[in-house]
Length: 179
Image (cartoon, rainbow, N blue to C red; front, side):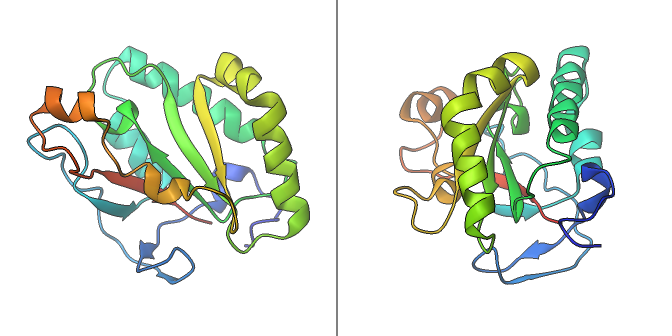
């Protein structure tokens, strides 16, 4: 089933192992790794399914509410061009009891210009609407973008690194869901 299939969005996503760049992927069955003693994912890009994320990260009412809002966002995207991958990061993938939102990047690598333009427009014009409506911090990446947000999300803010007992420059992992 391709990324432009008419099946509901969440049903079109499956697990793949990320090897090097996102475009070099192969299927596998590896669970989401345990958090480090610092409360973040181990460095790297960890492939998973939406079901695995839900099972791992919705352990309280607040997190379940965030996940439900994220799923409503995914339904909102059903009739829109599909990204190559969703890269999920932030407090939701950490040990925070009450993260404020779900941070993610739509990776548009390999998608046509129409898809890239569509999501660039959504990012520029509807980002606040998405935050207010779905409690998501939405970003996009496409080849040629000024910043590679796929890698940026692996960095730990200095204040957070210090509060978690990490070294400045330490990196954390991100979750990658692909069609």
